[in-house]
Image (cartoon, rainbow, N blue to C red; front, side, top):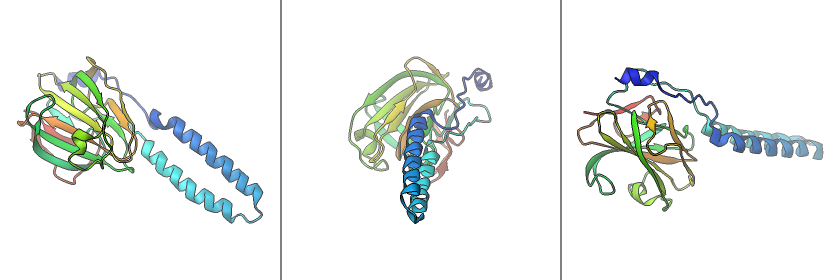
Length: 232
């Protein structure tokens, strides 16, 4: 069934994420304008080259942040949970989830540094039951309290065999904007973009306790590629 689902996926091919197009173009124009001004304002070209080197490097860091590789998960997606983000594993543990499930869940969390790709992918195939956004604080994303107290967006997904998976996008101390593309009652698939979080932040995935984790603490993850768990 997983292979059949993959054949009907609506794959989004984006190399530079649309969330960064305007920012990249605007900053590039500003840098270019200032550089031209420095070139013609000083006989000594040291200010020009120093500015170009410094802000050119900054612009390349921002460009790296907004890149969005085209990725396809190779293999059967049935009962597979993939990493929804690039980063590293900061939590693999059983937690009490009181908001929706009211029982224990296996939580796997991925922290994204400013140097990671910040596009988010759906972790499982299924149907989006609902999407909810919550305002909140901006604690450092790797702190345990960030999961519940920080601004976040919750996406509840039901897999084809009826298991519910919660994916939570969390804003961090620097990240102040969460973008969620998931919509209520829409089908969703691995390889599709769930959303985007600007600058360093975190994504939590809540799974049934019977799910088998496939990652360990501090393990690096690649969004839409790394298998983080398998559902029963």
